[in-house]
Structures are given as structure tokens and as C-alpha cells.
Image (cartoon, rainbow, N blue to C red; front, side, top):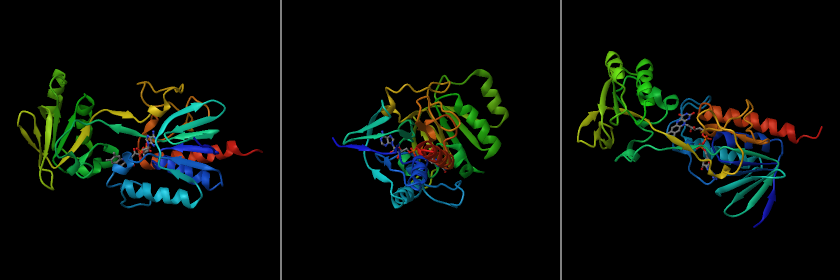
Length: 296
Ligand SMILES: Cc1cc2nc3c(=O)[nH]c(=O)nc-3n(C[C@H](O)[C@H](O)[C@H](O)COP(=O)(O)OP(=O)(O)OC[C@H]3O[C@@H](n4cnc5c(N)ncnc54)[C@H](O)[C@@H]3O)c2cc1C
């Protein structure tokens, strides 16, 4: 195992990690960014809410970012971080090596858990969406089905009705609907079905959702509302404070976690998971770490 010392190790090539690397590398700091590939940003086929980029894809954003950080001298390694130890600074351990630094930025994101639905790959991020802030706009005026497994999906239906479209069918598993909510949905003209989605219908254009009982619900677009988990297994063992739900990491306004000099960005921390927000956090943290590194 080789040992390597850096000013800062960044885990995760989401927009936050990449932006932090750009800033730190442009102070001529010794920076390593480690990423094992994949990630939510890469799955975004259309990003059109990022200032200065009329339309891009997450893949384009990330690939450009990786080229950019290398151009300023940051190192990039395709490795999986297994753990981070906090003793005399930090040791970041991958399957191949270990790296030391006084500062670590974690930008490892999260992963959603929708049920297995036939045809998902065909439509995901095209007409089947997971994020209102990202793709809600794309449902404007369309025939929308909302699929979920918690009462959050019902709140989402009311919100989508206010912002984007009156033509909504909510599909929930049995047992989730409190009595009075059926009336409230009816008042807002939101159709409601109990069932488990099995298949997205249509060859290239989405035409509907088929439920396990054979019922077919017509729609042009779908919004999924399912749980997600953080990619935070590499942080097990660190004494990190979490938010009220015990899920996302709590940080101060400067993105510093309860472990001093360990910063968290993007979906990992409480707040809005948007590419431009994560990038802003990365810039802020890069500047802050550089200040702490200065010996004045
Ligand atoms: C379908 C879809 C569409 C979206 N559309 C938009 C949009 O239009 N606009 C917008 O602002 N946002 C959009 N988003 C959300 C956005 O992409 C992210 O929430 C945001 O960019 C923040 O990402 P992140 O940095 O938290 O995580 P990610 O982008 O998921 O990056 C995390 C990175 O960490 C790496 N990683 C994880 N664990 C490890 C480990 N142990 N070792 C090494 N590497 C690791 C992953 O490989 C990944 O590259 C969309 C998301 C999805 C899924």
C-alpha cells in the first residue's frame, strides 16, 4: 500500500466535489479527487436550471468538470473509498491505497429506491422523473401519474397540481390513504388508484402505467416519490451528527460537519439537492479550506 499526503482529499465527483477541487487546485493546493463512477448527477439526461448552461446533461457536466480539475493540476483517481479515519488529520482508505490530508470533503450523494418497474430504463429521466426541482417543469400541462409508497406522494400531488398540471392520477399501495384525504384529492380533481406499478407502457413514448392487477392508467409523464439512502458507508465509524430524521448529515452554514475539518456537500447534507447548489457549496468550502491552510 502506498501512502500519499495531500492538502485536501475530496470523495465524490458530483458538482460540489468538482467545484471544490477547481477552487483548491487554483490556489496551487495539492488536491486529490476520488470517485468510483456512477452517481445521481450522471443520471440526469437534461439539466436546464444551471446558470450559463441552457441545456446540458449530468454526464457532460461531470466529464467537463473532471477535465477542468485536471487542467489545474488536481489529481483524479477512479477508486472506491471504503472508509475514512480521523486521527491526526484524516486517512482516506480505498481498495488500492490510502491517502492522508488535514481536510476532507465528502460529496458522495445518495441513491433512490423505486420499485423494479418494467420499462424503467427506457423512460427514466426522459418522461419518468424523481425530482420536482429538477424536472417538475417538464410535466407542465401534461397528463401526470405520481407513484409513491408514503403519504409524501399525496403532498406531492397537491403541489404538482398547484405548479404544473391539473391532470394528475396518484397511485399508492393499499393502506396508505387516510379517510379524509380521498375527499381532499377529489376536491382538487386528483384521481386516485390503489395498486402496485409493474410496467411503463409505450415503445418510445410513454403512454401509461400498468398495475399488478392489470389495470392500465394512461399518462404522458410520471413523477416517482420513493425513499432514498445516502452513499455514506465510507463514513461509518466517524462521529457525525445527523439531521432531525437521523439521515442527512448536519453541518454548519459553511458545510462543516460535526467532525472538524470534514466537510459535506450536495445530497449528503440537509438542504436542497441541486447541482448548482452543490457547486456553490463546493466553491465556498474550497475557499474556506484554503484560508485555513494559509499560514499568516
Ligand atoms: C434523474 C436525475 C435528474 C436530475 N436533474 C437535475 C437537474 O435538472 N438539475 C439539478 O440541479 N439537479 C438535478 N439532479 C440532482 C443532482 O444531479 C444532484 O442531486 C446534485 O448534482 C448533487 O449531487 P451530489 O454531488 O450530491 O451527488 P452525485 O452526483 O451522486 O455524486 C456523487 C459521486 O460520488 C461517487 N461516490 C459515491 N460513493 C463513493 C465512494 N465510496 N467512493 C468513491 N466515490 C463515491 C459517485 O460515483 C458519484 O460520482 C438530478 C438527479 C437525477 C437522479
